[in-house]
Length: 421
Ligand code: HAM
Image (cartoon, rainbow, N blue to C red):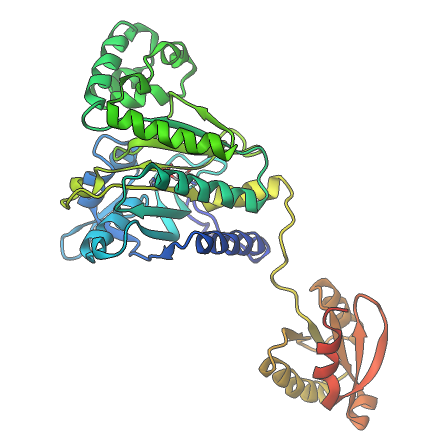
């Protein structure tokens, strides 16, 4: 074969589409419940937006972006995430004049040049929710609730939150000083990457996955011990809401997330059955992002979830999803003459809004009925010589296996009457 889909990308074939429909329908239902509105942005932005927003020292900006010069010489990047673009749109369209928080959601492809593995793609699809313009920890709680609600509605089991607070520009420098001086005493115990992180992005020392670095991480000072009064109070209020909600959560000192814009709350939702990468989503507060890209301060919080990972887990956990494509009627014909009449009837069925298909080509009636069965049709409408003469059709109930003769003019009424039977 000459071509394959590019490495790290995937085709979503028709057989997998019912899972996607199910996830999308559930997402729409949940965001409507919390009154979030859809926002669509272009799939590419100016590169500097992500450099300044996501952060120069992050893996995403340093190694993973699809960046190119367009024909006008502008550096363009395929979005590696939604949040920076959403804040850009918020600032550009004066959305700060709307009632706050401004509550939006987005969905679409995201591009990261990563090492592909199960559940990790170079083009993946994100569902993203953001609340902008409000400092209140009750908004952090709402964002976390939406995530929880979604996975619960999708049928995920054993959910838990992982939470942490990584402070703000007031308290984080003190913490980083403590962290760096701790690590200076443990340099010979950590991997090569961690030694580089010490200068470049010390917070990320805490989420290194290398087994060699785990003892050093365990002994590292927890960030919440260094929070300023404001960050401490914010985190405490959020935890009180979580306590009351009875949703399971763990304080995870290692959770720092891989994007530079986070302040205060960071969280993930973990679930059973999604393998090594058991985070179904990740997010947090990012009160400094709007300023980082040239705007006024805009406190905000949100999360994003990879749809491919959701679909993968639904399949692994054998969650039943509704079959979205199941014709109600299959038209089958004995010969070309009958087919001509059938094509006319099929048009009236489509106009009446009945999902109907027909047997194409010149196959035997038996072969057509086999196809009707394979496609899961509820009824087969069969036309032959006899039926043409009488202006009737044989309607075969594919589930009950009964068959009866129905006049053409009564066919639609017959199907409607029996559609749930
Ligand atoms: P993130 O953790 O980088 O956060 O990505 C969010 C989610 O996207 C992950 O939890 C994962 O489900 C999915 N994901 C990420 N990379 C891949 C990949 N290569 N293949 C498949 N799925 C992937 C963000 O992007 C932030 N913008 C989230 C956020 C929104 N924070 C505040 N608001």
